[in-house]
Length: 376
Image 1 (cartoon, rainbow, N blue to C red):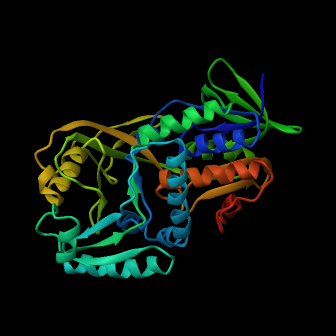
Image 2 (spheres, rainbow, N blue to C red; image 1 turned 30 degrees about the vertical axis):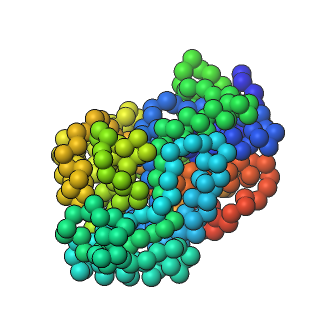
């Protein structure tokens, strides 16, 4: 049996940052991850702050939960700045994000959305085409205007993940590749059983940070956590000559587009992939073609670039709001699943979960985010 103070299930951005923060505070921390590489390691690297039009369109009943959480996104990108300064470089750029409009109706949608976001403290502005030309002259001629959110940005998630994991190891975190299948109360602690070779961990507390897998672990402990796995598609091109410093989105179409410091263009934004249960999702040809064609129409200068790689990952969805706190019937277990745009929120949620495990209040208020809201 392997013993520790704190066991973290899930080694994505939430689990890694929780482990790092807890270890630096003096806890003996072990982290177990299944090694699927479909979550944080498959992320496209957008740092989202403004409301995503895709989420509003697909999940209108959940959009108010994301809107109420907008202050968390502002604090999340500020934490990313601190992590970049301490553990980077992550190829991080925070020059803002542009959400594009091709019709007058789309522009009116952005104007309304920007007004709601400004009331939550976001730094947003509606740009007409002349103003947009001064900022992004490489956009297609059909673009009428855009919403600029100066708080947004982008990074290379592979660089960030590698460097943050290295920092966690340096702080003393022990990493294991295994899938935790059960959590069982055991007097003054918890037992966690892995699927590989019957490994068992005993910890005083457990943080469940495995995204779409959180429901399977929390259900037997008395709480049905309604997380779902959404399989999504991404692409990366060869180096381009454009100088695209902003995160690009669209008021109506599903897309994110960003240029890494290496010159490559990462294209994503929510086109569907083929889910395969616990395995890495499979790329769908129609998504590849549609996603890349849309990117080339919005930014004609990249239309001739070759796609070097396409891949699929999993986005975790629930009700749009972060799930953070102790399970009502099993308080030694803390669930930590970020809301929409989970990679952006990941470090903030991880740090808060680590603070809870230490008996402290998080520095940030996660109002309405407790898992008890799902209790029957």
